[in-house]
Amino acid sequence: MEASPSPFSTARLGPLTLRNRFIKAATFEGMADDGLVSDRLVEFHRSVAAGGVAMTTLAFLAVCEDGKGATGEIVVDERSATGLQRLADAAHSEGALVAGQIGHAGPVAVALGSRGLAASRVLSPMAIRTTRAATAEDIDRIVSAFGSAARHLQHAGFDAVEIHMGHGYLLSAFLSPVLNRRNDAYGGDVERRAELARRVATAVRSAVDPRMAVIAKINVDDGARGGTQLGDVIDTIRLFERDGTLDAVTLTGGSSFRDPMFLMRGDAPVRELAQEFPQPLRTAIRLAGSQFLRTYPFHEGFFLDRARRVRAATTMPLIALGGINRLSTVKAAINDGCIAVSLARALLREPNIVNRWRSGDEQDGTCIHCNRCMPTIYRGTHCTEIAS
View 1 (cartoon, rainbow, N blue to C red):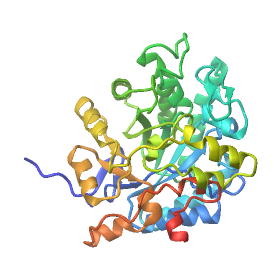
View 2: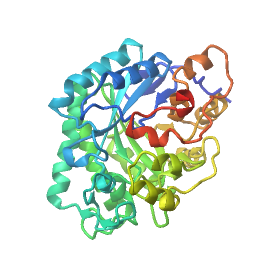
View 3: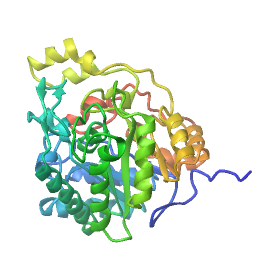
View 4: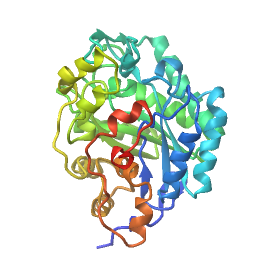
């Protein structure tokens, strides 16, 4: 039997060569300055690149103004172009590639006080208001915006674009049978629910030249009753395989719209989150936050079992994700056929963990998965254990 590749060996990602099998996951940094790339954001990604990852991913970049999910998020346009170029140059100076995650927040935009654009009119559990169903004009406009955003990233020197199709954002909401109740060409069976995501992937692929990799981040499980399940995502990935628009898929899960802790796992930092808000919202979060931030037991690599089943059913190159903090888990993911792994909290705690592992120190990452980094997104995402 052929031996599995080393985590430190090179790998192909479409037209790109990764220097190893480690990718910095797209996790909201909260470091933009009024929608622009800040020095702090540049340094954050430079330090992760210096720590040894093959590629670092800038998150979350809105494709248009109404696609933002939080105050101060970057919209990919002419205004943000110079800063994006500076960030790409910083990552490249450390020998890493750089990807930009683009998306439309859709129903998650209720966090900004808007109704939130969605596949259908559904109740938001966060804002206790209904979302607005996207019209045909909305859909055409947003597909075009994805293509434009990808083109801007290419001009800014980015090597890859990751299309956000997970976590309850707009494309994820269209893929979800419980959030998508449409009876037009964008609703119904898996193929119709995937139509918008496929149009977006086609627009992005057409907008960039062949030297740029195109990835999608997609849910293998919404973590909600009636939501996207594994069989749905396998069928959807097969459609992407047929289209030939994607170079790889990052497998994720959960929903920022309904149940964000399904993605994080472990303790829910309700008390710490409440501290980030003024009264009376602070008290409301303390009293009712556990209804939205549920507690799920943490275990290492919690999406790997689903990744194995996707691997068995499709030929799409896969990137593994899900609380990975051990080199043994990285090796297991690669052994199961994933081309790379995506790290998030492990790199917040130890930006140089890849270099440490490469040097021969294979001890587990020091992240304790307390999730207290989660509320810090409002003032710059960081590990509170380091800060203390």
